[in-house]
Image 1 (cartoon, rainbow, N blue to C red):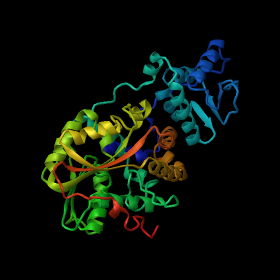
Image 2 (cartoon, rainbow, N blue to C red):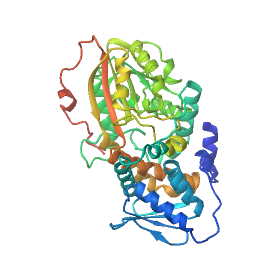
Image 3 (cartoon, rainbow, N blue to C red):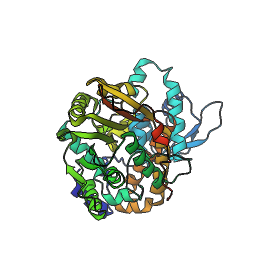
Image 4 (tube, helix red, strand yellow):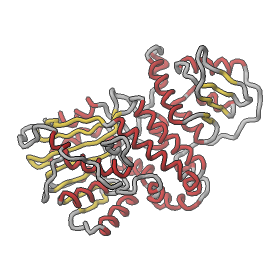
Length: 436
């Protein structure tokens, strides 16, 4: 979707479900559930590991797991919702919840974490045909034209929308770094920027190229605190307009160049290559090209850092997230991540997993989002609000349950000996700013 259409939707206050392509079905007249529908749901519950969930049908009847107390109630508001859920749960649960055809009584995040853990344990006993049925089909491609469409789908919803719930410091839509559990979102996001700069061992006068800059916060932080020159690439005009305005307001335009172009068109050589939260959108079929790009972009003693959502083993993105929220997204396993390094003989210098940091980041985002749900509904509509609530809660649950990881990997040319021998300098002084 184009940014101009996003802006229109932002101010329309009308039905905006087309933004996420959420299907809406007319409610079915009340009728008694058939016996085979009850049997179907009971079978579904067992295949899901019999989680502690009460399933309430559209007529008020309930089906509960055997031999355990329930913690949540899932209500199916029409018969078609039942069939959608049992035949394609990965896609249908998010769609049904967004459309108001499925409701959850109980904390949504805890509910989804319980479901993830239960299904993960149950899958070990599934027959192969059922396991294959559960898997997401291949994600959309990430060629140049498709990549632009995928990015516009998610990031050009309007800056006003993201301002409601992202941090007020640098407006970052990536995992923060919580040096202490009680850090505010703003403190943790600034600490993440500092952590990244330290890992790259930046010094005044260095040059940095950034692939996928979001709203430009990292470039501004690097320029302001480390005296480097940054060239940042992004294909989201909404984000770049904000980034350029902020750089001008902060007097950083001589040090930062924001480029509206795909990362594949990066030119020149730099002391550092950095990408925060973009690898998920690259597509693993494009890893060889990315590896070659980094090789030619890095000076002989340059360092690179990639920060990405990942998996413990190769697995496609959840079908609902891939279709409605992040089209074309693919979170790599650490082995797939390493392919980028191995293809051009890069030496891996540092690997860190910030999984629990991302769970906390998302919790802060969901808190902020929840406070502004009435505003979001006025900007878009109720189904959009419910979809994003489900997305944020589901993401927290996935990181808590270990379904998703967050990798930061630092590497350099294989023959570069001007590399740190220890990680001691990363923690010499606190990364968290004193102010909130």
